[in-house]
Image (cartoon, rainbow over all chains, first blue to last red; front, side, top):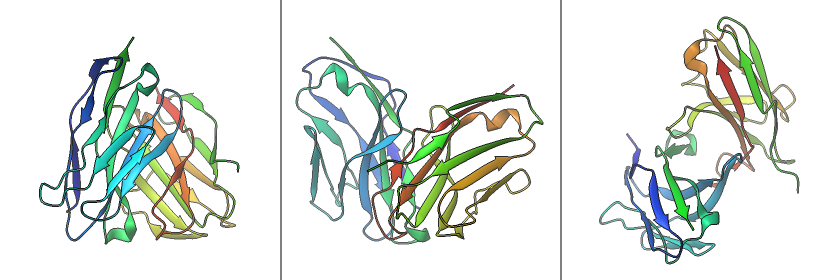
Length: 113
Length: 114
């Protein structure tokens, strides 16, 4: 079945550091891929998405490229800020199972000033 | 545009008690989801509604959990009786339709069962 694996946290970085959070997936066909973010005390928010191979999703300085050959959708940001501290979830939406989202376990990101 | 509303935000109960959560989706959204998020894990879908009909409740523990969306708008999720392992955040989300990719989430209800 479909599944998502993302790197364990917490990930702790200094402000202005480069960020990578790894995400790989297993799915049949061509799923859509998502990154959601959960700030402390808030609900999940869609950060970015990509719907086909080689698409790049981007938002708020974050980017992720849909790599079919490596079944990956790694999240990157060139220079993180303290306000980026949150939990980041990778998810996929398959072509079956009522288009439901399959979620990774989440990666907690801590940015120190 | 108002977001997804949930109440209460926090609830503490003892095991074997009952509890209910309420969700009001974004206006016009036909699809409503209830998720359970245990600390350190991703959300787990409990039930999905399309208008007032159930699309999928395969992961809902039906011996103790129930949910309804009688008028196809707001929804309630009930647990009776609660167990210690039900301690989690219960998230409600909505989308325009089942086929629509973007789900919008409420702030969640944090449940602690003692």
